[in-house]
Image (cartoon, rainbow, N blue to C red; front, top):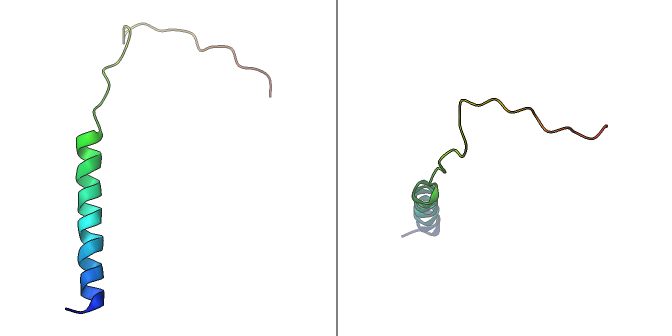
Length: 47
């Protein structure tokens, strides 16, 4: 097997494994508070 083929296989496995890891690790957090309530934005300091 050539070195370039082995390198391509390693890169493909790393990309696929990283994608699967992100999908499994990405657990969306439930929204906190009442989603229908409107709250004023906090005051910001001047530029």
